[in-house]
Length: 380
Image 1 (cartoon, rainbow, N blue to C red):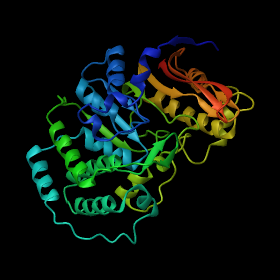
Image 2: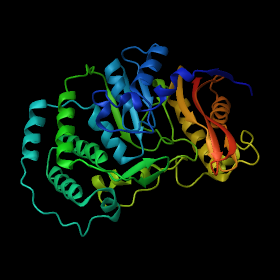
Image 3: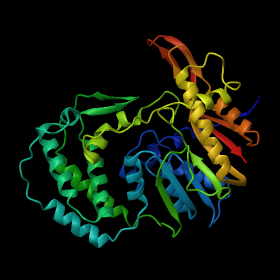
Image 4: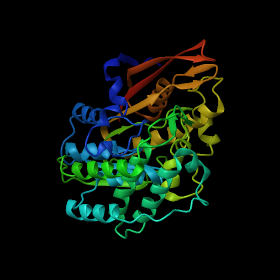
């Protein structure tokens, strides 16, 4: 099948999180795998979204789509399987009483330090921070957990996660946490105070409209909480094929938030165990030598796209940001395959905008091909 391919390299930065790093509320947690507020705003304008319309993001990450929906003035449903990302999204989109948050801030920062026993602290946290910062992080984390007001507790917990990322000795690079050499690491307490101050100052900086925002911690393959034909638009970006295991990349944040618990991996295919039945249903669309991991990914995405088709109104539109699958011996054109799957489900002929391209090599010298990021536009 031939798709309309459009080169829009000028939009490359918009499908990254970089433009969010200085924006009120959006900057509360840096999510390098996400897209920008400006991208969501652009899509809502492109779709001519109006008040009382509903937009869905079934892979909301840290809440860029729901928060932007509040800015724009449309209703939104956000879904993410990660309890961490769900919590961060909820913190970003809430209304707060600034006076109450100020009072809690004064109480928290005035707490007299008591020595922290690090014997039971997870080894990864000991690698991630120097001993002085780690003790301060654990001390303040435990004080935050004493708060009975859950929204306020989560607000300060996000501030702690944000500050912790500024003093870490481990860096998120590609799909791994890697040690980095850092000199003059700032004291955590100072960065934490700044993080709280910035968040409090942000509370009045955005004109957040009185719309309905519904967030769910759930699996995008089963959106039973959403009625048939109730959604006007979908703006989302699923995990890229064979790219990142999010629980590994954000294990430090998971440990600080939930302690040493076992969280199911959230990999580049959506679930943990692939559905062989669903794989067989899409075999005609996939190249003959498609790796099993890619088959699992596309089978899961077929389920997700079917759910999106179910909940969309007739004429409903979708913007799907995806990346190519990079394997040691090949590039898998995930955008075209996903467009083909969407068409087989019943969507109208898709259009693909190519927004980023990069050369992929093996062993640093052997060129495999070009990997691209794309926006797939589909309509019911």
